[in-house]
Amino acid sequence: MKRISKYLMLLIFGIAIHLTATAQTNKLKQFSFLLGNWEMSTPKGKITETWYQNKGSLNGKSYRHTLNGDSILLETLVIKKIDGFYTYCSTVKGQNDNMAVNFKLISDKDSTYIFENAAHDFPQQIVYQNRGKTMLLAWIEGKIKGKNRKSEFHYQRRH
Image 1 (tube, helix red, strand yellow):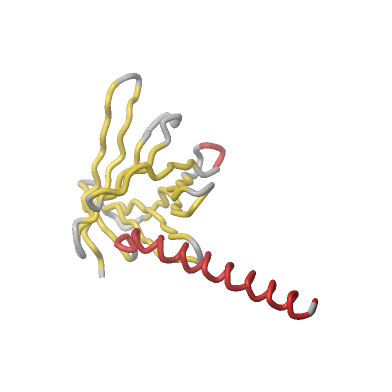
Image 2: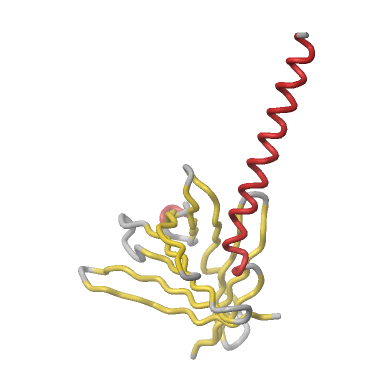
């Protein structure tokens, strides 16, 4: 009887772990519109973001590409669950002791995903708006010295 109980407990534990992992992956599907390569032209070249699925997270990298072909890593990105909340984690080389700054998802309405960290210097919000299969609008906003600032990024899907 003890053997059956032990195996039953192991089976229940295994099923619970599988269901938790599946639920995490399914919840991440709300961000699947980000997956792939995105590009925005600028007068100085272009900015790209590339997103891919990892176990329990979405990972990304953002680069600035100059007109002469040089590329500079701007930030490393992760969307994952922290303390029960989806969190956008941005690591910028040379900032914040090269540690990630976390922005908690506060809204996911109308294909617009708002991540916020009110304590961060700038930006306090990072927003992604799903504009269909080929377009993505992202923006950062917040206050600098008491003045509202906003920068928009109009991305096109790269193939």
